Length: 626
Image (tube, rainbow, N blue to C red; front, side, top):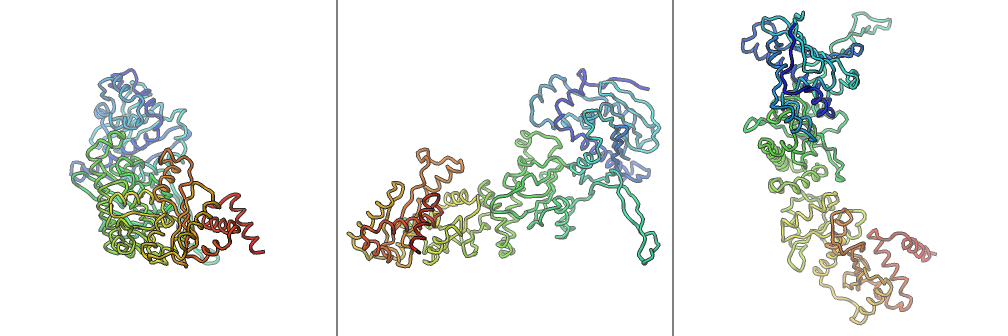
């Protein structure tokens, strides 16, 4: 029996490993299974090259639990190790100094990068085990060996009786980690980290039924239960195949593997890059809602089919985290810190490439089948607008496929829409006015009034649209966006129709004074306009700018400090050509109740009539009916 001390320049490396990696205990299984896969793949490669002449036989990896013995064993049939190789690869862990190691990672957030960065994959076993054994036999002609270590720098190596090629790693689970003796826990970890590894991994058995060849009294086949190895992984996932090999149904089946309870995606992008970096993967476009009810962390990052993380913000632009799927790149190490990801040149190239592939796909789909693209816009719109807000390059590449939808369900690109409304919807400064509604039902009266004058109204009712509108205005100085209930519609109508008031100047002054005295609110300005007799007798509008500032303030976006809790500066437009204008003038002293009723109706149309004022309005309305 050979005895010795592991070659590290520290009193005891194992407490350090446990201290710094305790919160990431789970990764020990990923590391050990990944090592087993590496050993197996090396044997397969040696066999293909003719350097291994024997029969490779089954290369299945097995993970086995023995709750009674408190052991977890990972077994492979790979290249194995000789005693000399154990000495070289297991016992010699080279650190410049333990103090430097401890200092380097003190207080760091991304503790998982220690594993792999220092070649500590195997030693992650000591995060959950007090004692670890390696029983291994090399594919070369040499005796089997057994290595044992109790979590101190001391180890023993002795001959073993193992007959088959390969390696068994036996973990004697410690009392603090007994959860790793539960079948459900191990199955969960294997499903998370090892679901798509390229070598079959057995964990337990599963039952199935076969016909016995005999019939029962009713002539039905008699069945008997049998068991077989339960393979927990899919060794050939869709993303490693060529797009030409996959049908649409196979892409959807893979999506269901990833997200069993999800609705089918709208479409997908297959990534396959060899230079200047290696990147494969499939990104799916899920169906989104305007309310931005989005589940992020749905993109899995893999390295050579080994799961790394589903927090991919530093690799995939934030707006693309709304997508689902898988990206796999061996150019991204298994264990890296966020600061590494942010500064690594390959990662930056991968980020830019993914963004370009997505924008190119959107433009391609738009040009190929515009009708289908329009049908998907309710989900796509949120994603495209978010991307255009987040990334200037994405904006430039995708703007030709960004659609604007009006209240009649018609779609136009940004450029097409500007050309459509240019002739009719321009203000006195010559700017194109894009009227929009963010609530079709609540603003129906205003929408109807606009449409009756042949104006076009856009639907901008997604949460992201407030910001998107501002971006479009900043990109095109010739256009402005005004909500349909803003202080714009009446000006457009007035400009278009050039109507004269039926009331003379003195009557108009008298009518304005009556409204101001009745309303008696310094936040409400009264303005008289000669609109069509068919238009509403009074409407409330708001300054578009002031309303946006108010909304920003309410959403925590700042606004103006002097605004306080102002209601937003309301403007009451009185239509002097409506029959009710003349009727109110004739009422004299009895006109206040009618003015109040009209004002409350205008407030009601804006959803601003609440509380006691709403109760008073209802009671007056009932009184008039009696």
